[in-house]
Amino acid sequence: MSETKKFMYINRRPPYGTVYPLEGLEVVLIGAAFEQDVCMAFISDGVFQLKQGQDTIESGMKNFSPTYRALGDYEVTRIYVERESLEERGLTEADLMPLTWEDEDDDWAEKPSIQIVSRTQLSDLLEEQDVVFNF
Amino acid sequence: MLHTVNKSPFESASLKVCLGLAKPGSDILLIEDGIYGALAGTIHTAMLAEATSAISVYALGPDLKARGLPEDRLIPGIKVVGYDGFVELACANDKVQSWL
Image (cartoon, rainbow over all chains, first blue to last red; front, side, top):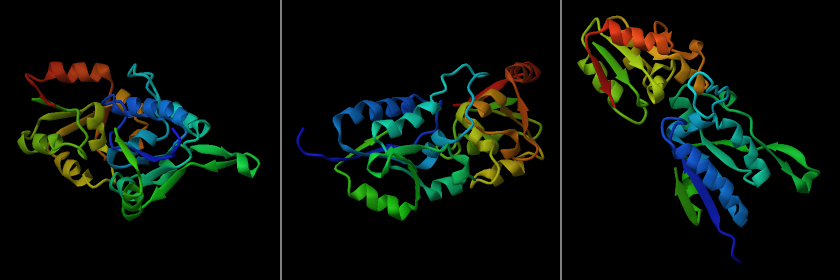
């Protein structure tokens, strides 16, 4: 593939209740091999995917939340979280697990991947994508 | 009657419909994504908070933990139970209505 396209993966569902969040995360990690311009957006109940402190031991499910920390190594460095979705759910940025990436152009400085954006900003970001996937 | 709700109130009307039809004295147990209905400080909090005076509301602890939600984030009056509590509620009520 010669041309780089802008990809956005939209995550709208809470973790564990369906297989969509886990499948979506795997598609993002696989898709990273194709060296496109990739970002993720977490809106609606999708913001719950990034809630820190997930502990699935008692419920016996697979805790896939640590996998989000690998996104930075796969050059997925822009993770947008919609502010309105957080507020509607009584959450703040402090409730989210910290996600970072290392900037090779800045002496491998560790930088935050999560950006809290307004619904208006997200609307603009959506408009500028070439390809959008929904999970 | 025991009512169980397994859908997020942000995605489904299950909890609203359940609250509309549950009689005073009923038990409601929030499970799976239904536990998001137990959260304090959300746009859906008032709906359930009002109901807790006439209805006993429970949330399944293992599902709360899986989703990273500690008890201090819940609406006051909601009781957290484990799988054993789920069984006890099912046995204590003559019927179980699952709002899927």
